[in-house]
Length: 289
Image (tube, rainbow, N blue to C red; front, side):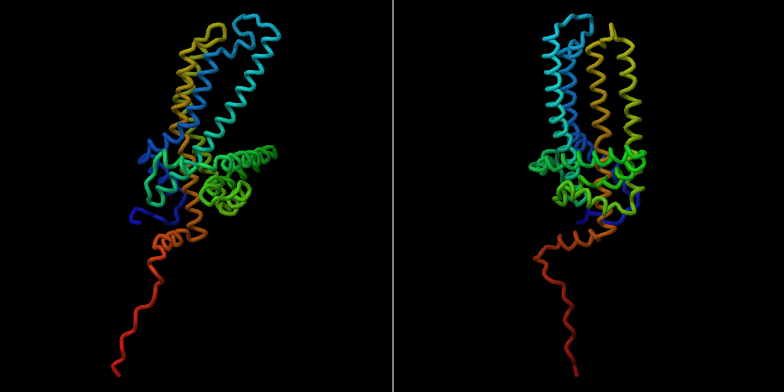
């Protein structure tokens, strides 16, 4: 309990604690976030190696209608399989990061394997949360964009709620809307800052290699090795920046519970355990009269 600091935090304190937690557990969070990125990187390398562009006649190849239909069908099936695998891995990584932050926040140790172990049996639930919140935000964005940003902020702790409180997707979203009431602006700032960090990482790592790829392309086909380097740069920048948003949202979840539900007192009482027994008043001194 000595290392547990459960208290209401300002937005600045939440962000400061986010980066502190990230720095002190760098390999833990990068290791967790690398899982879906490995799936993505493997698909990108495989697609380039197999020459997916040949299905569209790139490079002057003449492909018959029957072969073209077969290749396109194979591509569609491959993309669907990839999307399922990637979304599953991404959802698992999000949930594992939430569990890792929870363990560290409550003064327990966390490992990559242990965090993913807690996700077992919950992948479909976290996928449901991500898909449902995505649809809600999309509908809001179609209504003049601003409602979408409001909904993005208000549903921001849905994944922590679903994982840590064992709630269904719809219940987790409703609970997130309840917890973030009055804190929508703070939630939006978190999303905005993470987006800024992603843009900075892309500008420093991904975009220069992308421009180099386009500049050295021959007959509209980029050199194989340069494409691999470009995909690898995307992998690195995403692995470095990806965990930050989930860490901040997980800490914000606990901060909102401390503020609104006295979670700090609840945790203190539960940590005492049933063996502590009820707290009683000390016996009064015997009368000398």
